[in-house]
Image 1 (cartoon, rainbow, N blue to C red):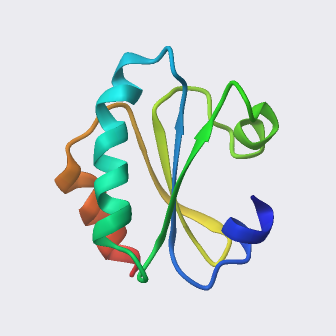
Image 2 (cartoon, rainbow, N blue to C red; image 1 turned 135 degrees about the vertical axis):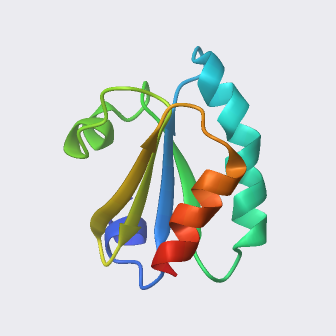
Length: 96
């Protein structure tokens, strides 16, 4: 995780989610679509909070879904809850 996300030379979007989380399942397809739309421009991934509690704690993720936007290894923006695709794309476009 650290090598991919913190050391990335591209902006990074990380979706913190869990299988039991209804809103997470709503936003999941949006994140997957964005991954294709921004291929080569940004790194987009998902972290299951149940399987990776240390990563969630490191970034202070308390509610899910939480989508973090990182640039240069630092969190520059975030979105909490199920939000529209346009809002996520707008946040990513702002750091490209």
